[in-house]
Image 1 (cartoon, rainbow, N blue to C red):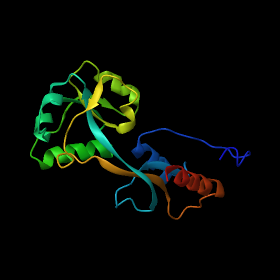
Image 2 (cartoon, rainbow, N blue to C red; image 1 turned 180 degrees about the horizontal axis):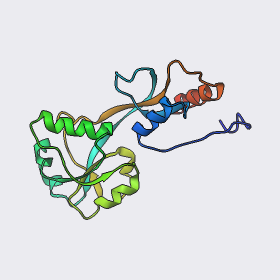
Image 3 (cartoon, rainbow, N blue to C red; image 1 turned 135 degrees about the vertical axis):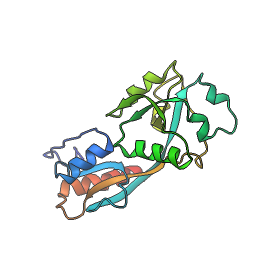
Image 4 (cartoon, helix red, strand yellow; image 1 turned 90 degrees about the vertical axis):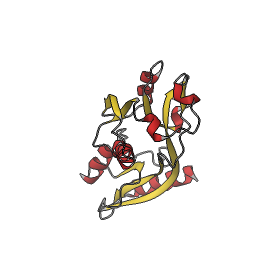
Length: 184
């Protein structure tokens, strides 16, 4: 897009999805790339770009890697690195534990930002966290636990989110089109 539109000015921000949605709703951003907002997110439109899946990640020496037929209950007494309680991913994890009658995950580290650099904290510990598949190639010594999606379904839709009633500039429209081309 920078080659196509030499006069274009872009402002890129990297934040947790909840923060980006807030900035979008406030009119600070024209569009965001984020997980699909919940159905009750009035005033927002979503155009899917791709699907991905998060996984529960642990140090490669973690004993749960050796357990066959791993269940969510096996994770209940483990320590976790998770985002804060207002973040949808954390709410999803907490609600799955609650639905199965389990106590909320034991929090050892709580974050208000997302970054693959946080995964360095897992190395050499017994902590668990939820991370995207792009993280697996960046850090040695960590692996996803073999937890069935029926136990904890972390599949999600990622796409462009924008305000339904707001003006979407030609530049923002072109950015959306390029993102769609890039992911197809």
